[in-house]
Image (cartoon, rainbow, N blue to C red; front, side, top):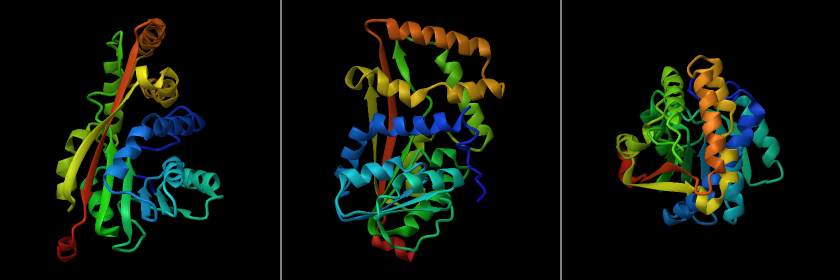
Length: 276
């Protein structure tokens, strides 16, 4: 299946293996706070839950650990990640992973209690079409959760590393060139409304190194994506070198801090949506 998004696991980083490890660490970084919001939005045991853009299946695995008697479905456009997820989750008979696009989901109307699209629509050139398609497969009263970045503020640290802004600008340029929007976080409520969802709410979840430790941050970032930006000519090797030196200096500081945030937006499919 052709992947027209700005995220491709075998090219976004210098190593697919490194990227899969980073994806797992990124789930772990936010999960404790993230799942609290899922529960606040009404997710409970016994539900039918679908994740669009499930990647290697790490969120599905977490959901299965958190909730009893759930029926979980993962949809993923990248064939390599579909195979990885199937192998990773094969022992769980209540989890199904299938190939497919969030823009054309091969699942029936009015089926799921909850849908999750985590770090997906920021990579699409038509996020509203994706939200409408997610809305289609929800039951009336079902809810969709969209989790995305806003790279106006990615990892911030103390002591400050000014050159990180050059890195983030290079990353944004790369994704925009591929028709993504890495600053979509601020737009989520507007997009969900245009996509046909109601009762919309948004939360910001924050990971802080003083609370969860350095290791969680270091595993969730790595050098794979910056190295690829250098290789593509979007980030200079000189700037990359400065970031590496200042990053090590920052970590040696007794009062160093790392902070990162995600935007989490939820909307509900109302009964009247069936008539629209």
